[in-house]
Amino acid sequence: MQVSVISFTKNGLELSKKIEKAFGDWQIKLYTKYKIEGLENSSSISYVTQGISEWAGEQMGQKNALVFIGACGIAVRAIASYVKDKLQDSPVLVMDEQGNYVIPLLSGHIGGANDIANILAERLQATPVITTATDVNRRFAVDLFAQKNGLKIVNKDGIAKISSKILDGKTITVAIEEGHWDGVGIVPEQIEIVDLDSEIEKDIVIKTENEMDKAELILQPKEYIIGIGCKRGKEEDKLIRWIQKSLEEAGIFMEQVYALASIDRKKDEEGLLRISQRERIPFYTYSAEELERVTGNLHESEFVKKTVGVSNVCERAALYACGDGGRLVYEKHAEDGMTIAIAKRKWSVAFDEI
Image (cartoon, rainbow, N blue to C red; front, top):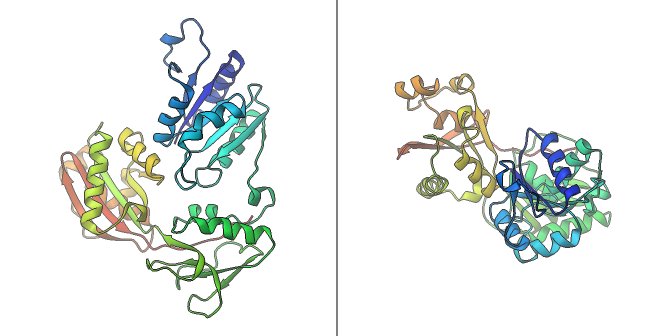
């Protein structure tokens, strides 16, 4: 994920440089409205000539994380027109220009703003100001649970209902499709696991089928992993059209996709990174040695092996990302310098300690 940091004063600009230095392992892009001589020639800092709201809209459209160094009011006014859906909004944070506090404003759980705030605070010796009720009360957060387990939230209105019950101290009943929970993790105190076929009223149902159950919240597993290869510099729009075409042929929807996977040579492939960020799905890459461990009836190519060190990228990457129990549901297809395959993973859920 790209983190776009914008400053408005000299102190704010200096803090943004500290952020960039402290996060060399992140994709950080610096922007500023503070005009100083020679800035237009800087390769690391972009001067923003447009309005802040327009800038924020462009960043949110690309699903970048936004960090405003300044007053909360500036950020609120800038993003107001672009806030749409808690499942899709970009993470937005604010820092004061002295670097004392980090405040997640938007998409704390699903977008990851709370996690970003905590990491920023740790590395810059700042104080994270977390306001999410389930976090400050150290209670089970169902949206975070869904995200960590690769589950699609079918009815987002159910999130608030479940959280309200949790915060009221009530017990939440959770029904999980048989064979997809093996007792991993510590079940939170307020969670009671019940049988899917029981007559007990269920608050949360986790299962594959697309039918609506009588529950406050329905969660469905994202079961599919897309293995993909492409020529260097392949345009994002061509890649996404290729992915969408392949998914349609396989009878799969994008919201059912758990991750993208490829060889490690593609870890910085801009088009794939952008798709991963926009669709909010992880992009995993593996070495040729790791991909070579995958066995089965695969479409091999000596030319590919001479080029990248392994005879097949897309099928091997999809299967490797699945782990044990994965199987191909859409074998290798190639077009215009792109290859794709789709595998179905064996899904399961686990609980984390609060």
